Image 1 (cartoon, each protein chain N blue to C red):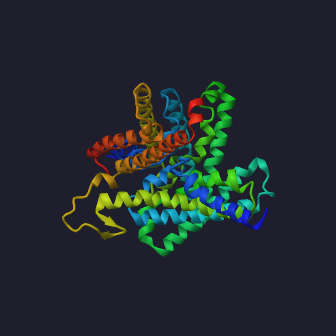
Image 2: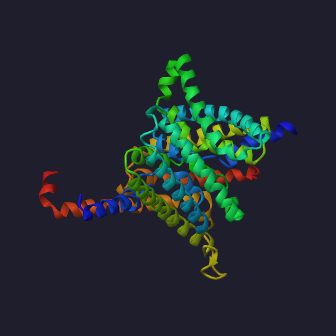
Image 3: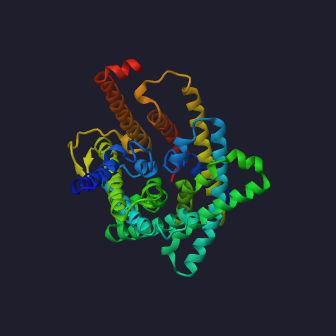
Amino acid sequence: MTELNVQADKMDVFLKGVWKENPVFVMLLGMCPVLAVTNSVINALVMGIATTFVLILSNLLVSSLRKLIPKQVRIATYILIIATFVTVADYAIKAVSLEVHKSLGAFISLIVVNCIILGRAEAFASKNSIGRSVLDGLGMGSGFTFAVLCLGIVREVLGNGTFAGFSLFGPDFQPLIIMILPGGAFFVLGAYLMFFNWLKERKKINEKIAEPDMAMAD
Amino acid sequence: MVTEQYWFIFLNAALINNFVLSTFLGICPFLGVSGKISTATRMGAAVSFVMLIASVSAYGIHNLLVRIDAQYLQLISYIVVIASTVQLVEMVIKKFSPALFKALGIFLPLITTNCAILGLALFQTNRGYDFLQSLSFAVGAGAGFTLALLIMSGIREELQLSAVPNVLKGAALTLMVAGILSMAFMGFAGLGGQ
């Protein structure tokens, strides 16, 4: 591969996670934290960063140990690696801000069972070089953070009238309380998925118009 | 008075703070296997069963870890125990009831990564429940999970027969329905939430 190709490949590995194979909106993985901690922007951001941290480090370790781990016990090994890094993240968040740790509750520990992380370890890191695995972790992590922020912003602005704690609309604003309640999480995520479905449908129609022969063949 | 307290923990986990619809635990199976009532029933039964065992073992582990002053191992030991319990349960069921094993199929191994199980273990530790309280918490959580899954699969079976706009097909519609269900479950707060 030439220098340019290598660059393009790396970019592709990274961007795939952010947009084309976005873990939340496209692959529907890791739904529990996406719904549970997005009632404020700060919570969503901390969750996104913590998950990205665990993803990158677990991908790094799994990829560097990929030739040493016996095939039969690989899942158990991955879970142990992930649990170690989650414990690190848990204690780090507790040390930085006890308040955020309290509002996220058990959901930081529950990163262990986030299927995105185990999924990437099994599907990508166990088969690819260290550099590519780290990039993949970074891409998937950014995609996840992007998704939780999308939800967090909508829910906090509509449900509380604030953005990251700052009041936006003044005291006269009537917040849509349902947005920060559990039901709102389902509605907002459902609306986002609807939007992505709509994008997909439109793309399909555009492609058909661009290639009339193909459309006839259908 | 004493029995009332267990009853309250049970109700709290099953209805008021339903595991799926208001604590958001176990969303993946909730979206994934709620297509048919028959599979939903089996999944609910398997999860409730593993929850009960996980709750008992988590109680034991927590006491042990406190004794040797190693709480930082909590998460790692919980997940290892849950994973091996699921494996063990799988083997036992396979040995004693091949029919049940066949019926549960792929769902059993999938339970390991179901966050409702780990969530249950972590919640009962955080809230400092004693042994019997943990048990009623686990039974309530299992009942709540099964209930949510059953209602959802019933609605989705009906929805299959109706005309749905293209953009809403798939997970989007399921999430919208879940949102409405979650609002309905808020009504149970009148029973006395925490």
